Structure formats: structure tokens, C-alpha cells
Length: 193
Image (cartoon, one colour):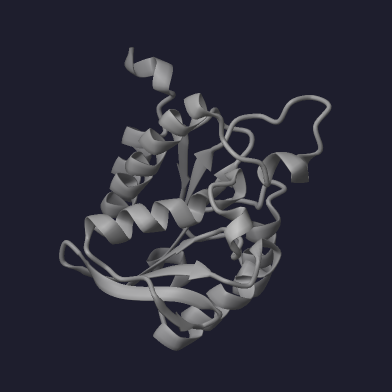
């Protein structure tokens, strides 16, 4: 059993914002593997299905970003999984170029409030995560305004590539190929040219 959590904010006004890329990736995974993420429990929308031979729970916490850990803790307690090996969190990162992935087996919150709350509720930093780059905020812009803002048309193209790559990376991670996924997806896009 593997729990894959995508972070974001509920409410229509947050759809398509930089802070909701975790929800977007969950939607791509759900579509790819025909998993309905519509059941409301554990303060999230959840759906269960299979990715290859691995049973998965896909979750989109509905607690608002800064309280994501409450939902994650409830999921971990209910499904009795080992978060160090069977939890995958997907979220936005303003320190990465738009659409670029960074996969880690562990780490700090890096200033991300949703991750801070998850680390506090999980009681540690050792669990896999996929960070999806949303680009650096403009110098004079407020960080909150930036992450709650929408992508430009050009950025949307890059983000679609990032969402697809993150879904592929999640597939590799649940198959037990975390190191291979890091080797494949942590490369900078310009390295491929």
C-alpha cells in the first residue's frame, strides 16, 4: 500500500494556481490509472486503485495548505503504512524552474508551510517527495500573491510537461525505484538538449 498525497487548497478560486500543482499531479495520476478521487474522508478527497502491482491511495487534502498534516496523519493512522517508505508527497517549489522536478527521499520543509505542517504531524522529515517547480517569484512580489497566482500561457505548457513527468516519477517510486526516479527526473531540463 502506498499513499500518494498532492498538496493544494480547496475552493474553485485556487484551481490552476501555483500552490495547487500537487492536486494537478494527483488528477493526472488518477486519469492515467482510472482511479476516482471523489470519496471524502480523512479531511481529503481520496481514491484507491492500482499502479502496476502496487495498491495506492491517492489523496487531495481539503484542510487548506497550511494544515495538510492533519489529513496526512489521519491517512497514515487509518492505513497503517510506514511513512518512510509508503508515503509520497507532491507539492510546488518556488526555487525550481517552471515544470522542473526534484525528487528527494527526505528533507526539510524548505519554507513550504504545507510541508512544515506534514513534518510536524508525521514527526519526522524522512519520507519521499516530488517537488514540482513553479518558477521563482518576481523580486518585488509578495510570495503569497505569487503562489496563489495563475500560470501564463507559456508556463502552462511547461507545467503540463512537469505534471506528466511527476506522474511518471510517482509510478517509478511506488514500484520501489526511488533512486532510479531521482536519477532520471532530477536532471535539469537543459541537460537533455
